[in-house]
Image 1 (cartoon, helix red, strand yellow):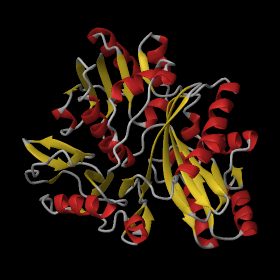
Image 2 (cartoon, one colour; image 1 turned 90 degrees about the vertical axis):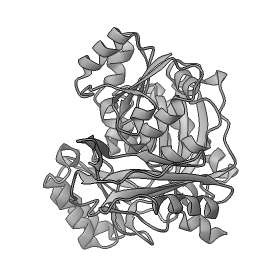
Image 3 (cartoon, one colour; image 1 turned 135 degrees about the horizontal axis):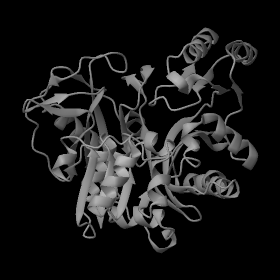
Length: 421
C-alpha cells in the first residue's frame, strides 16, 4: 500500500515509525511531517487545511490509504472528502468527529444511551453558567465546548477559579471553541486513557495508558496537552477494561450508528476510575499525544492492517498483540509552556537511540541546516522496560543526553505506578 499520513507532531512521528515497519507498505508520505518523521517517510509540503490539495495529491500519487493523525482535519471533514473519492481513510466522518469537536454533543450522547459520566449542563450565556457554578459549588469542571488544543478545560478547586474560567471561555481565550461552555461535576478518582479501534460495528480494544496533564512535578500548575505518559495503566485491570467496553465503548458505537453517524477510527476515551467504576470524562477521536508514543512502542502487531481493517469494515478479521513491557514517555517542552515561549531555539545533535529508547519529534524544524524547537512540546523521549521504574530510568537517562538549553520536563512521569510498587 502507498500510504499518506496527515500531521506533524509526536503522535504522527510514532505512527510513521510503526507504519514504516510494515511489510505491506510500499511507500509512506507524510504531510506536512517533521524532521523526525522524515527518517521514515517522504515529506510533502501540503497545507492539510486545503482539503482539495490533499485529494489532488492522493490522486496524482495513487495513494491507497490515508491515516489522519490530528483531530482538526477530521472535525473539518477531511475523511468524508477522501472516502467520497474512493480513498480508504482512517479517521471518523465530520459528524462522528463531533465526539471530540463538541463536548456538549458527547455529554448528550452519554445521557441518551446511559453511558456513565459526570452530571453536566451546557451554556451559551456567561451569567447563566456562573449562576450554575455558584449553585453547584467547587470543585467543578469548566470546558470550552469546541476544539482548544487540549487547553480548554479547567478543573476548578474554588468557585472563583471556576468563574474566571467561564469568563476566559466567553471572552474568546479559546476562540470559537468557547462560544458554548459545558459545566460538569468533578469526578474523584484516578484518570486513565483507553484506546479502541472501531469500524462502525465491531470494537477492537487496544491498550491503556495514563497521561500527566499538569505542567509541574507532583501534578501542579496549569493543564497542558500532556507532559508524559506510560502504558499500561495499572488502574485498568482486566475487569475495568471489560466494564469500559460494555458500559462505555459498545453503547457509544451502537448510539453513533443509530444516530446515523457510524464511527470508524480510534476511540480515545479519557476515563476517571471512581468508586462506581469507569466514568467517561471525554472522548477524543484520534490517538492521544503523548499516549500514542507509548502504545506504538508496546504494539507487537503490524499497525497498517489494523488501521486499514478499521477503515474498511473488517475489524472482526484482525487482532492486536502487545508486549508485556511497560513503555514510558517524557515530554521535553519549551520553557514557558503552556504559556508563551521562545521559538526557533537551537538544539544540539541528538544522541543515538536503540530499539528500547526512542526520541519522537513533536515540535521541531530544520532552519539553516540546524535543528530548532518550534513548538511548546518538542520531544517525546520514550523507553520500554520490564517495569515502570526501569522504563522511567531509561527515558530520563536519554533526556539527560539531549542538549537543548531552552528545554524542560517533569521529572516524575509514572509516579503513581512507581508508588504502587
